[in-house]
Amino acid sequence: MGRLTVGALRAVLVVVLAGTVFVQAGMVWALASGSDPEDGSLPLAPLRVITILGMVSVQVALLCVWRLVTMARRGTVFSHAAFRYVDVVIGAIVAAALVWFAVTVLNAPGQRADPGVTVIMGGVGVAILGVALLVLVLRMLLAQAVARDVEASQLQAELDEVI
Image (tube, rainbow, N blue to C red; front, side, top):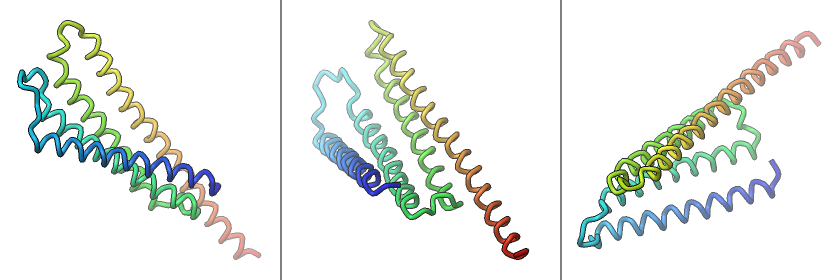
């Protein structure tokens, strides 16, 4: 990977990580201050807790992507060590989808007049799960690449012995 690409990706990761920390801090502050509307029209406390958990899943994925970028920059991404980071990213994406489905369930009673919003939110949750499946397919490609790399190393060792 080029230095510019790595630098740009890391800058984006830092900005998104800072944004999630900012949102988390705001949610914790709002949760602690108890500034919910008096009419109780929205279950804000559960939504704030869910938002905090959602941001944790995003942060975990960001840190794993950072580590994978570091491995790619060093040329060590095609190793078994990369699998644990990819697995954690998949888990974080699935957790984010579950968090989104929880938001959908909490929001659904308020959308009785317009159930289309709930259907769209459910569709977004399914799309998030689709991203997890996409990363799973990429993990399978990584596994094939690692297997080919190991096989190439073995063949090179055998060739070195013959020569």
